[in-house]
Image 1 (tube, helix red, strand yellow):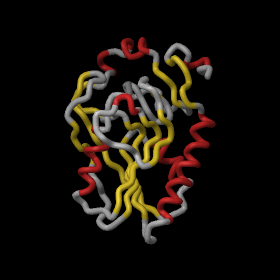
Image 2: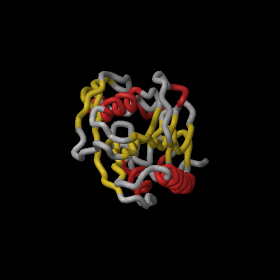
Image 3: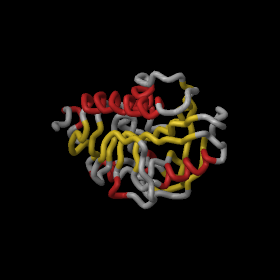
Image 4: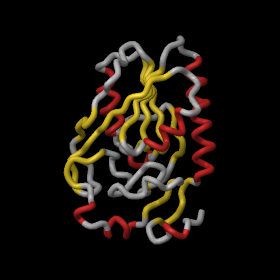
Length: 205
């Protein structure tokens, strides 16, 4: 797909279009609703990982019909550039999830380290169930034996931005998912790169 003129210098291609995203998000919501319908009634707790999920989350929950509550978690990592480091929780749960059905939402599943750590953390609060939903699944980078219950798109091992996902806090506002050109990684000034405690997205390469 052709990259819009404004972004041709930064992006190699549009990997997933705005229309494709919209159709798949609606489909994901239907899948989740069908699965939840087989469970005893009750209030769903949606837990979203900051910050890359924001656009995906907003679109997804608008299509969910079950009564729900919403909470957020932050997972940070000390790292240099795009190399992953030690995971730490920068924001914990505010809601009580004991005995509740939890839907954990993330933007991308690649190595699996972040989601694995978050699921392990959530289990200590004794929810009834934990289900996972990710927009993107990048199996080529998986190091943990982990599979999302619901995944929007399987993608190759490329560095993606847009639809809430960023590089150095740029590109989150793009309405599509694009592949970042390698030269843009090299061109970000040192002061703009993520060095130290940053949001962990496992390195989207």
